[in-house]
Length: 74
Image 1 (tube, rainbow, N blue to C red):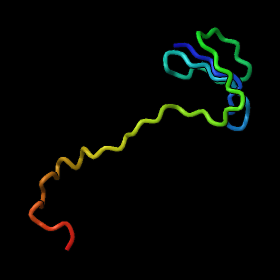
Image 2 (cartoon, rainbow, N blue to C red):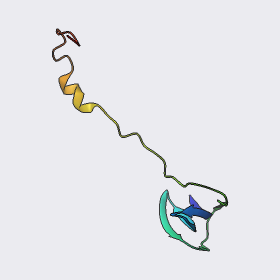
Image 3 (cartoon, rainbow, N blue to C red):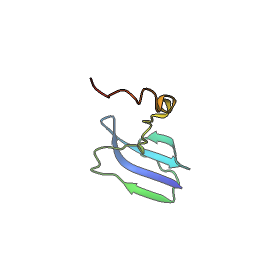
Image 4 (cartoon, one colour):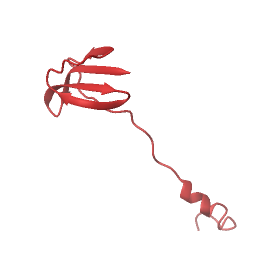
């Protein structure tokens, strides 16, 4: 996918963002690059990448069942 976001507020300044194959390729003012889709971001307050939850408890599997015979709180 090739996407051009126009008139985005980034770091307090109006800029354009060019995205190709899921990666940001270029950020600048008044970009005129060929894109399959153009989105006018006029009035947009924030641009965020997709957020991924990296919170895991895989290390806790090592302690599974450890001290199960004891009360949780004394």
